[in-house]
Image (cartoon, rainbow, N blue to C red; front, side, top):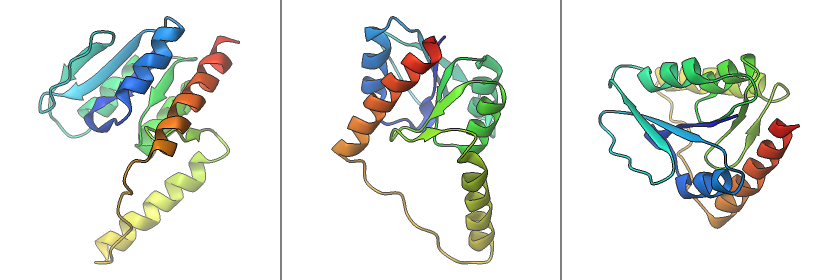
Length: 146
């Protein structure tokens, strides 16, 4: 088992590494060459800055039982399809019971934006988000170990 992190937009990296260290789980952070990420614990892999290059690299590295940290529902769907677990940077756990609804909502929002409508903005990160991320990541780690 390993934790794969979509590093291009990943808040809570320190919490992810803390949870991983406690259980001696390797962490791989993937980012494109436009982001500079360093870590004393995680392996950082930089890929080309092409369209969805980080997403493709992350999915290529994911295996059954791994944990993927991302907010991209498309990446989540592919990770779940490979038998991996998925969680957002704010600690929301994705699974087969909620991914279809999230993909549909993403589709509707994209359609609305193309029509000139505005969609909601991203909310500021809170301490509740940090608590949820750590708690749910620990839950997924224990679930993946079984």
